[in-house]
Amino acid sequence: DLSKFKAHYPGWDWTFDLKETMTQIHDSMVARLAVLD
Image (cartoon, rainbow, N blue to C red; front, side):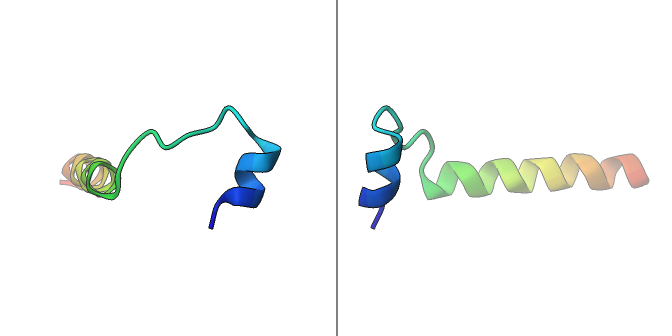
């Protein structure tokens, strides 16, 4: 329930869905690990 958060930040809204967020995390980790090789 985000009602309290949205009450404090009325202009806020979702930007990414869960799949997009997980894709960004994955891609970031792949890039970090590639630097270690």
